[in-house]
Length: 111
Image (cartoon, rainbow, N blue to C red):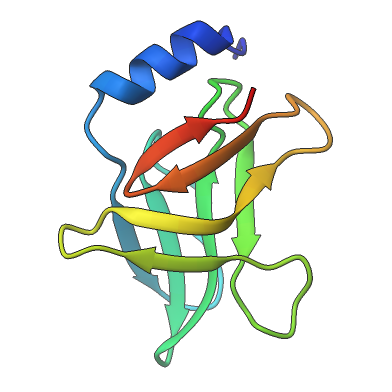
């Protein structure tokens, strides 16, 4: 898949509905990830990782670890409607090199 220009990514991020969080049982993510939503792997009330497709349009599979003893790691929260927030930002050093925040289910692109 081709990476979309930044102006298009910002435009679609503003008009599309917020991304949602889908919780699956187990310590691994499923092989297939949804096009927009995030998948949380939870085993025995412990959150392991969250997976998503890169929002730039390249289709790269992202797996972000949530375990406290792992580096790098992210914190994940969700509001009442299931809209996720990740901290810190996601910055891909290889491939498409996307850099973004996810706040309230919305991608906020870093220029």
